[in-house]
Image 1 (spheres, rainbow, N blue to C red):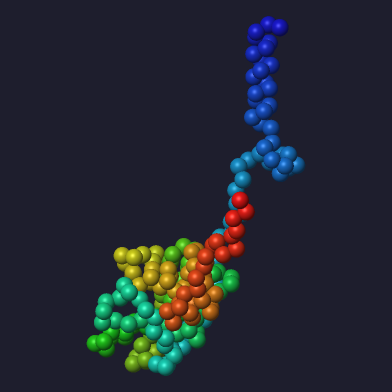
Image 2: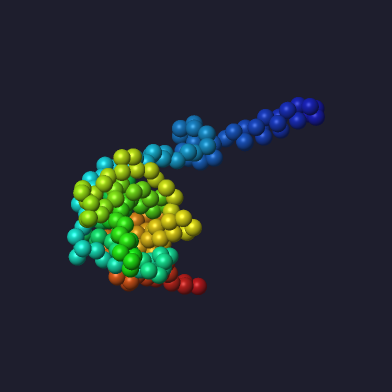
Length: 189
């Protein structure tokens, strides 16, 4: 055989190998494009803002990033974890020893590390709850709003997903469920 014909044959075999399906899906469908995940766009569920909790409803939560003269409290009775948009919604109260009072109804997205304030509350004002017209999602970070990042990491989220209600309640009480990924692991060697 002539070298030119041999080279042409080798080239055509090489191109056939590179264009051949690489898995059974490509074989059956003929789709050889790069696989793209079918990702749904996130959409927030409608939120009904609960009334401002009474003084006896608040549970103190330990947040180390707050100044020494401030304490944080959560209302566990109105806290919700949506199974549609995976947002944890809660009333948060930050109270100072000097009498300062800041209550906010917020939402936290564990998957993106973002929070939104839906309403502000103060029992001394009329009305006690003032709704935010267009809540904006903002990043929780350890530099700005550090206590929200700490709430996300230590209380509400386990990685990128919200914790179960009982786990959040335990975290507020200072008890944390220990998760050991090697609990069911055995060495078969």
